[in-house]
Length: 290
Image (cartoon, rainbow, N blue to C red; front, side):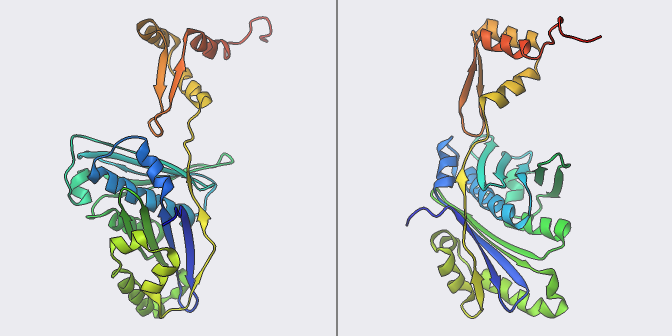
């Protein structure tokens, strides 16, 4: 099957409900190439990647969407970042060799956090829910119930090749009269098996689940992997440290080595580079005004 790396929106013509289907192939495999993950961690990271892609088109924003799990269990951190240009990157941190368990046990006392860093100087938005469910999908459904007041059903799956997801959302215009239709759609979606979600493309998936409904499928949005790290951003981070601290590291190592946690790219700063960081921001006394 060719790489898809796309998200399809769809709309029920005669029901007040909408949905999305995402399949990430090469994009997901690029995430996995950056570092080896234990199977349990890889599964949760893949589901989070698919979920973040779904949310990036469900929630309108210009800038950066970050979906993360912060926890105290064997799986300590999962971070997925998606830009409004449909690029993404991801990482996870864990201890030992985690064993398969419900998400709340795997993560311990944890939280699911959604952050929107908006462009044009606007204040960022952040929403948070506790990890009470057995799966990431359950935690996300609780987030939508609490933060968006929109009944939502989410199904996620991931293996070493594909990260995929299905989202159904009841529209506000449904009203009380649309409850039966919404329950029927949810029951149909609940019959979906993880293997079907991973393997079937969007048209086949919709036929499998909703062949009796009139569904409009829109043109897909393409996704790709892209890390936002750069030498300039790394230099800006180093400027937040003291010059004395940096020079101490230079004396020990001969150079400053900074590895991007997302993509693994290494940035090297020698003594001349470090000196230039601070020279560049030091005012020239001859031009300073008093």
